[in-house]
Amino acid sequence: MTTATTALPTTPGAGTRKAGGGKLRALRRNRLALTGAVIAAVFILAALFAPLIAPYDPAQPDFGNVLAEPSAAHWLGTDDLGRDQLSRIVHGARASMQVGLLAVVLAFLVGVPLGLLAGYYGRFADTAVSRLTDTMLAFPFLVLAVGLAAILGPSLTNATIAIGISQIPAVIRITRAETLRLKHVDYVAAAVANGGGDGTVLFRHILPNATSALIVQATVGIPAAIIGEALLSFLGLGVQPPDPSLGVMLSGAQSFLAPAPWLAVFPGLAIVAATLAFNLLGDGLRDVLDPRGGTR
Image (cartoon, rainbow, N blue to C red; front, top):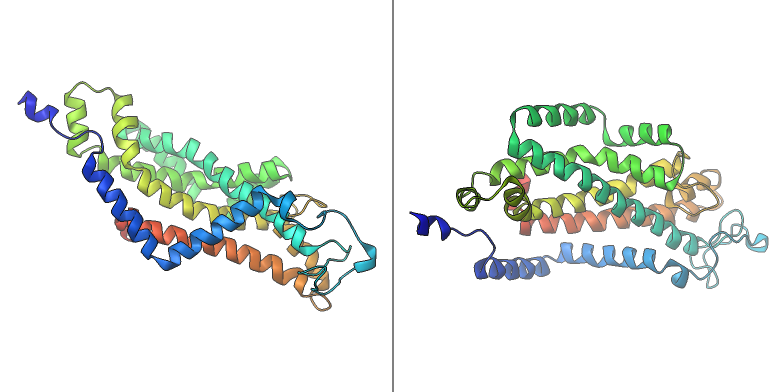
């Protein structure tokens, strides 16, 4: 009996590595997911190397080129102060990626431990965490983000915190569901029978095997955070002028939609491209890593 119990798999083996290779090949064959991954990588690289990529200083006005149409000198035109639109979009992408990534990290740092606690221990812990989650889910994501940002004050950091807090309930629900499923599988039972403590079971067996669903959730959370940052900046609760942000650019373009439509078109297209890229990547990852995601 002891030999049989010890032989139960507790860590990924060669079969898991082969399955991982098959999933990677399946992801490569998904053209939409691959396209999304490429576009997302372009946005991330643009955010990282914005000072090197941007042809002009995004905050430097040029009153001799006010509202200039797209041209060889200014590929996407200029705004009402003569600032280069391409440079401002590149630097605005930096703010979007910063919020998108850091907000998701914040949500995971808080949501994953709470989800593990609720799913593994149940009873009072599950009741308390579930009630907290239900209370937060009573408010739509963007409404909650706007309310928190208004309380914290307008800044990029506070916008990141507000959006991250707003995404915590979704992370808790995914983690809790995965924990409830995984804590009854054979290798977890084997770990418990072999004397594994709660920490060992949670962080060596349950959490690593829940990463597929959590990765999918991250790719869903990033585009939501990008839209949230654009909304908060548009409302004056995020990035503050003259610092560039896609939301700030859209807000400033309202008065010039007729004479200079490119002021709104290009930042809007950048937001659409970024969110669509991560959504396509998330759909591809869901199909490959978490086939049950469509029914959850």
